[in-house]
Image (cartoon, rainbow, N blue to C red; front, side, top):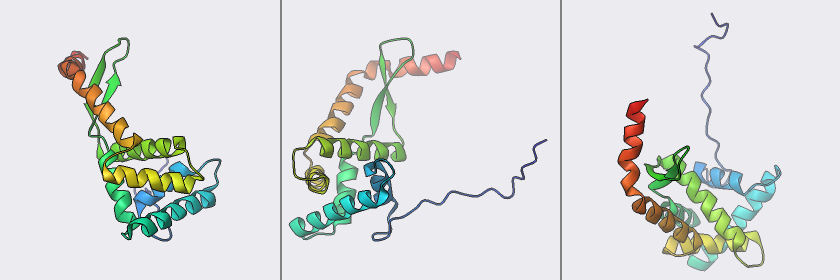
Length: 162
């Protein structure tokens, strides 16, 4: 018998950022952060939000949500162990948002520009408009899943064998 009591379980609260009080912003800042420098990641993010607000005259949080919503994939491909087939799999919303954030940051880091805040704001604006490298990555993933649609039943049949 275990000594831990089950009645005292603590739920993990999702942290929010200090200005926008949004969990999505905190997810993005945690992915921007390198080597534990969270204050620098916050500076980069807030500078990018200021650039977005100055250029569009809209709420930058709305642009951020729109960009992440457009980049979030609904379906992905996973390789089946021991073979070369890639099986299409539906993605949960949290996993899709994490992928979208990863793709947006990857695309913004590869951009040419002055600093990370400028590159991040440019990529977010492009993604909100429906273009950019992150949108291309999502479309590429969807095309690959569509091409491998044949293997959907293959995955279901291997699960039933186990």
